[in-house]
Image 1 (cartoon, rainbow, N blue to C red):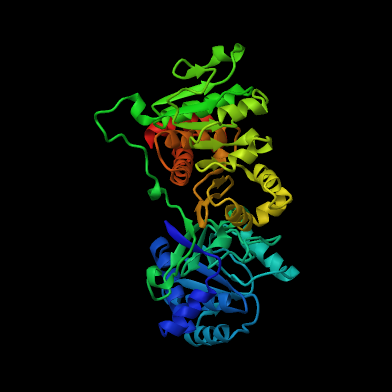
Image 2 (cartoon, one colour):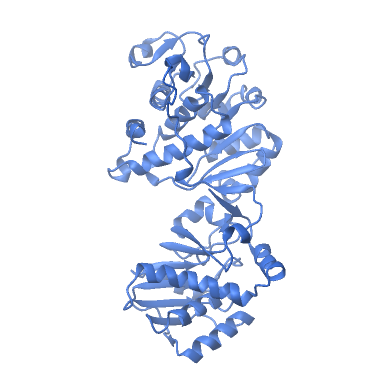
Length: 466
């Protein structure tokens, strides 16, 4: 996993004050990192256009142009006259070495966006908005220098924002790049060294990015074991039976030794797959509970209270966020909540934290997750989205590996089943949420069909390939 920072200006300042590294040295290393990426991925006859602004992001672009000059067919498009001290310095250096310029976007192999960096806020001028539109229409491979132009330090995006194939970011990961809206623009993300290793450059952070390699699967290493050795998940079987059954199937496939659907006798019981068990009551040997997926109005408030009259670990989703029982669930010691944005907005309202719209939440996901965790530090929160946030207390993780193929009814039910399976097998809630989320996104990546054709049962079927 990698650290994520709300801002890196203080990290740069630390380099100046503690390590004796000047702004110029850091910039030269950043440019060298971009050169290394280009050399690795493109041949020496590639035509490269670098669009530079007036500030330090433009200075990065000018330093890159100078370092590429002589080995590549490189051009600078100076969108705005250099004005910062570093931009003036790098412009002078580039001119002295003979870096060529263009006045408009031309056909090229690589297009580098160095228009504005992390300090952008407000709106672009009509001229720069038109330029960005032209850049986005180019068929070139698009590289964002540090962050795509138009992405603010808070993660919001301008009306016209550069759409990168890859963002080569300087020194450390910026949290702004992982707001859901930003995923449309950043592309793949690579961190470039600024002259010291990341372990030296970076300081403590409560936010981390999960890598797929962080996934720990529930392998069975004990040879002397039986079905009871791997837990018993009890899943509330509600009126929307399909969601409950999908969750249960996912849990069984993900290692739970036993899975029982708990509900009332009705015609839906006939549709339960024979591999799953069914009961009117909570089994005596239950080790974890899952509820909310397809729950509907099958249970009364009193029945739900009786169902939860224990201290077993639980995963709660979907319908549970509109029910009175939510208040008692929030008091439990071992609980994972898995809302999507609309459900989280409702959760914030019921918890007395904020009464906000979904659009407001989406622009401030990080802050509201932190606010929730401050009030309920014992609860594990998994906020679904393009970038999943898994949080508890003062620890926050982002899983960026999801794909649009997961945007389909039932995908979340599978995720809840995966979490429930790990809880049933004895994994702690925070760890279970992280591993289940990584497994969930990896399952989507393993799917080889068209992205629009993925179904929840494709995810369940692929569990055996993890």
